[in-house]
Image 1 (tube, rainbow, N blue to C red):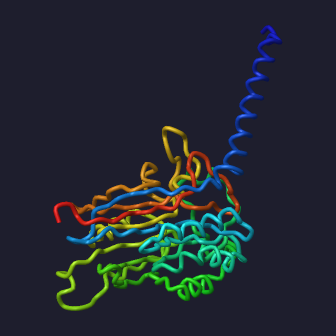
Image 2 (image 1 turned 135 degrees about the horizontal axis):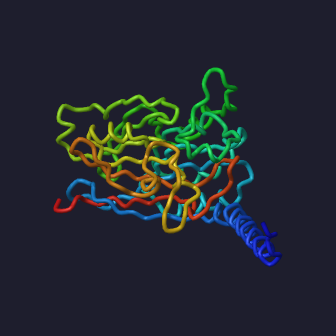
Image 3 (image 1 turned 120 degrees about the horizontal axis):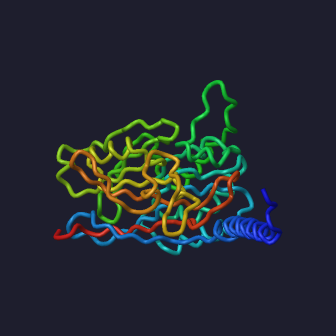
Length: 316
């Protein structure tokens, strides 16, 4: 066989160099630019009772806070300027054992508004280094009893801080909260990714509570299909979740490659309807605000908070 001509070798070398340079540029962009290129996604949803005025919900998820994140702190502070009627936090707030105090400071201005929350796995355990290719084999596994447990976080201090700020803990709990003349019935679960969810149903009150105008909102960190099925079958008007990071690394024109749960990747971020046994419930999956400290990178998937403007039902 004749040797490969030198011009062809040179062309292959240039191609390899171009691929390497492009890859390096993408990593640099995702690490230093897009990871801190925060945005706000706006959605409108008609689920309020007849005659109700518009109501704004600020949905936060997957903040993954670490000490020293100045840009993230400044942006979180700025969200108070939105003047939301309610703040909903669907977990994974931490990414470092010493992040509780600076996170509470970053969220301080938002605690001037009513809020509710549920935890994610990274409110219990610090993230660990893992092979990124493992996400393509399915949802990441929770360590078994034979594995070294991940670093425990101060969940109690985090939840106490939220509680002192007036936010309501909905971890496997249900509670009614009147806001702007509307009765909101909330039902939340602990993180389904850790298989800790226990359904509390909806708040129980007066005998005719179901006849009085109200809105039923369900919260979960990870949007596993079994959880969406349950809340849809149980009559939720809206389900809020996070966990997916919107895929975190997406292909332009295609979208998320993984969702880190059994949710289809095309549902990894956004407001979509979930159908189960003839019932339909809108589900908002946040693309998340941060990244795990062990994978500080985003591509074609900007970090986001979500403002949902709730309005009266059509024809009401």
